[in-house]
Length: 88
Image (cartoon, rainbow, N blue to C red; front, top):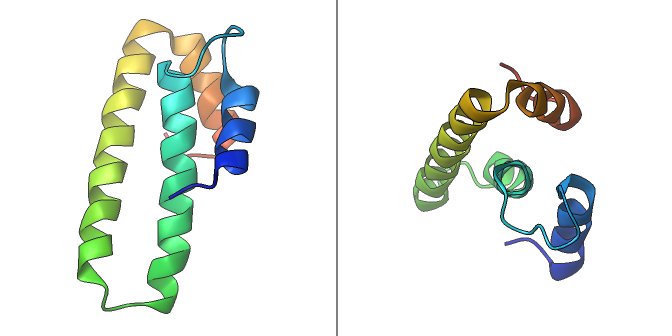
């Protein structure tokens, strides 16, 4: 789980307008932070298969959101990929 302050920082960085908290780009950024945290956890706890399954589910959700964003607004997709340092 992300701490409230870290989550607010991510939302502030990726929001499209002042009340934006749930757009696809904000959701992808939040999922990316959670994925990075879980990846660090799994480096220490190699046999935690329940968390590994959760990680795979998060990666799948992020992948689907990125596909949606690419189809809807390719320019925003490219900038988001670049800013989050993700592979295409």
